[in-house]
Amino acid sequence: MLLLLLIFSNFLPFISTTSDYTNYSLIRFQVDLTSNTLEKLEKFDSEFDEKSNSWKVLLDIWAEPSKSHPFVDVLVAPQFMRQFKSMLTSMEIGSLTILEEDIQKHISLERKTMLETNQLENKNRRKRRELGSNWKNFNTHMYHPYSNMIDFMTVLADQKPDMVEKFKVATSSQGRSIYGVRIHPPRKSNPEKPSIIIDAGVHAREWIAPGVALYIIKRLVEGYGNDDKITKNLDKFDWYIFPQVNPDGYEYSRTEDRLWRKTRSKNETVNRYCHGADANRNWGYRWGEVGANRTPCSNIYMGSHPYSEPEILGLKDYFTWQITNPMIYFSLHSYGQLFLSPWGYTNQRTDNHFDQQSAAREAVNAIKNTTGVIYKSGTISEMMYPASGTSIDYMQHLGVPYIYGVELRPNELAGSGFNLPESFIKETGDEMIAALQAISEHAVRVKKL
Ligand SMILES: *[C@@H]1O[C@H](CO)[C@@H](O)[C@H](O)[C@H]1NC(C)=O
Ligand SMILES: *[C@@H]1O[C@H](CO)[C@@H](O)[C@H](O)[C@H]1NC(C)=O
Ligand SMILES: *[C@@H]1O[C@H](CO)[C@@H](O)[C@H](O)[C@H]1NC(C)=O
Ligand SMILES: [Zn+2]
Image (tube, rainbow, N blue to C red):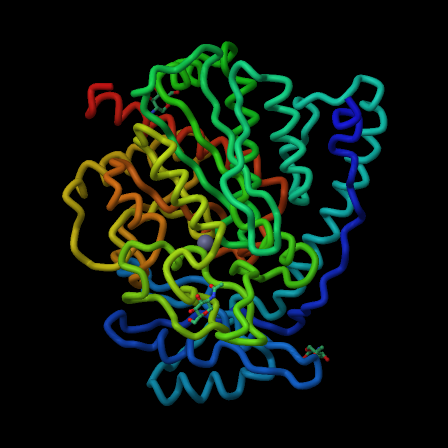
């Protein structure tokens, strides 16, 4: 009972972060896709700052080029700008566009909005306190601290035991428990029932992803028995949702460095100063091949060995051994409005390429129909640079038929990038539900489920 009374009440005022991105600008330039421009630039991504005794970001790739859009968007530190420009000149890249002059403005604006939402939420919560704590009171239209996400899952599983199970999949490097929920109709599912798997938060700074995952959890539970499409879907599929799989990185991005991407693991033999690995380069299938980085300070560092990150090891074991009939897998990221399919490590097509792509096109149409927003689809290596050690390739290797790394909103033109305002959670969540429903219907048809 005590738990229920305390629930959702630990809203701390937002702690100010130490990293500052004042005058860091977002720059766009065109590249030849066959050149190794990105690899060359990545070598300069950070430097050791003696004053603060820490590594500072000099350059960070925010959007990779693709065939249909051969532009790179990079965040460039003001102290690196001159060198950056002369490097581009030496690579015969002429024209640059400044998309944003000062990315800190977006970070500060986000912080201000969140403080306002928090104040309002605290006021509402005091009013609601008399009504007791209920999973329905969890506000999915805001970005939450990790502890609130756990509280929500706990209360939901307590209050809806007939259709929600909460389970632990891993303990993070810093000791945080990582959970998933299984959502199914209020009766026992047959063991061969197909499943939909969603993970989010792999990359710490992509806050819209956990926001959307939590929104989906709540919508499914509210919708069963009230919304025909959701009811029909849950009767057909069980859903496994892992709303925040990199809580160390997420909390670090909330309190220290808003643009943190990796986990927060430490390996003193590898590097004393740089923490974390890119959790989406750490999976064991084709680990460490193209598009992964061996430098521990890099933002796409693949880790010291496959599954060096306990978060990813736990997730892999769960996906592999605990889910009997995985049918659809979504890994939620941001940003760019893309559906990315395997393979990431090679340009070759998967055996089920055409079916996977036609399901993706149905998802794209369903989104257009729901919110009017345009997503694009293709394979990782087709739409972006190749990447290996991703969950997408692992799941393809496991034989899951419908696999998508989803880059959520905004599209690449909006300068807000990772700082997408909370007010977008609902629409972005609604379009993901529409996409998942479309792919489910496709799967039912093609796989005769
Ligand atoms: C950022 O740029 C503006 C305009 O050039 C300048 O006035 C300001 O001092 C710079 N701020 C920092 C912290 O470098
Ligand atoms: C740290 O890195 C070393 C060298 O790559 C590796 O052998 C070791 O397993 C790593 N330790 C952990 C805890 O991952
Ligand atoms: C789009 O919406 C209309 C009207 O709700 C519906 O009839 C149609 O099937 C939808 N198309 C897709 C691709 O979801
Ligand atoms: Zn990501």
